[in-house]
Image (cartoon, rainbow, N blue to C red; front, side, top):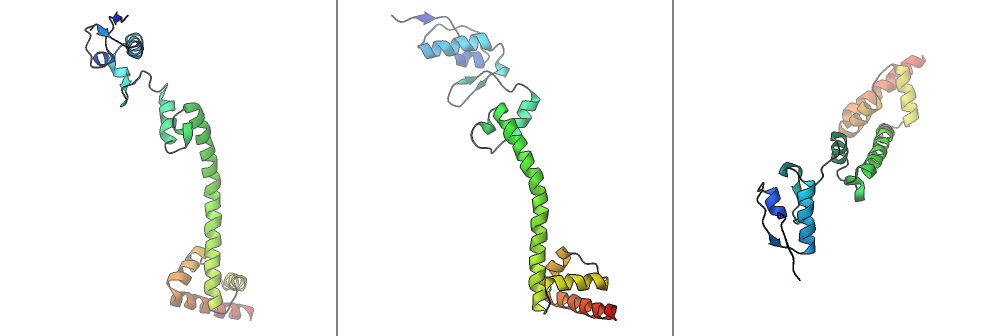
Length: 172
């Protein structure tokens, strides 16, 4: 009832041994051995996974390998299968393009909020301060002004005073 097959074991094929060892094999062992004999011509192309199963095929191309490497961390099959990964990767590029613009918007909003808070402590509104600054000819951008308002309040007060004085003199 038991059959003996004259195929090499998967382990002997991958160790580079070319000697055939007759073994008593189950149907799964026979399939692995036949797969090992038919698909793998040299041991360098095969990969033995930690669970003992063999992976006979690597990546189809360098492009596939690069796409899978870039899609590391994606959920589901998007980090393993090329066809799914390339779609998710293209979508991620779209999100990245969009969010580079959104990031600039968000930072500008943050600087304006900080600047508004700092200017209100000096008794002005943001819009009045910007209008005065434009008339006075002082060219400090919102990022610099908001950092001054946050981390250097005395320096910021001096800038606001200069803007107030120069805008008053510009009116006359």
